[in-house]
Length: 276
Image 1 (cartoon, one colour):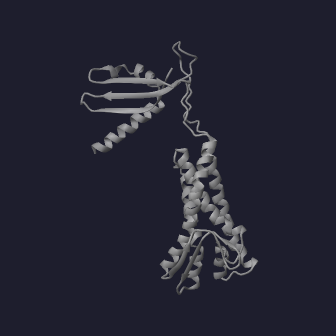
Image 2 (image 1 turned 45 degrees about the vertical axis):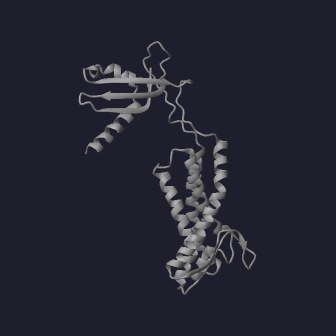
Image 3 (image 1 turned 135 degrees about the vertical axis):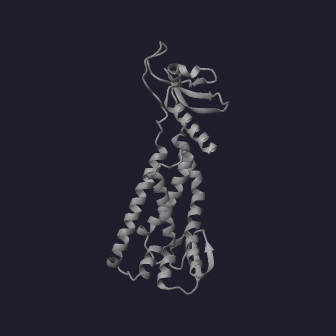
């Protein structure tokens, strides 16, 4: 119980350090200067009078994405082929060949990876084996969309780049079957397993598939916009009565507070405060 109480006090002190001008708070609360209780505050002003987020430049973010791209490519191919292999093993089949490097099939189509397997499967099981990578893609893009909509995206810009790259790779793998049509196309094989062999029969499948791709693309675009968007939430400005030191604008800084009580237990809160 004491642990939870300590956590609660930490949270309250951090919030107070972030949203209240601590000097005004201390001046107005004379009762806090009673014996056994004190407030000490150190205000470290930034040289430019503002508190800005230390956000990487656009070029650095693009460079980070370029560095991640090769690893993301192989991760995406491994995830795609691994989904096929996992579905095969789930239904009791045997994987004979597993590759995550580009090659050509017998019809001359370029394949970024290949999974060969044997076993006895029903049509429904073969359909699931064919579409398994797309299920993985939906889970990845859906998880990324959930982070976006719930505002739980990492605050670190490089972490945002990494998350966006993984989600983008999954979305590209999911969406490519709409444009690139061939006998080795997973979506084409899936529809054929279900008996849809001509354009009219496949239209409803492609319509639903395209709607999922569009929804995922919108979330991916939103994520990249967030990556390159400057965070101005930490640029604090305010108006005060002034004390002859300026024009009434709040002067942000790093505020450190320490509170001690008669019981001898102390808490230290660090947050963004300011002075007038």
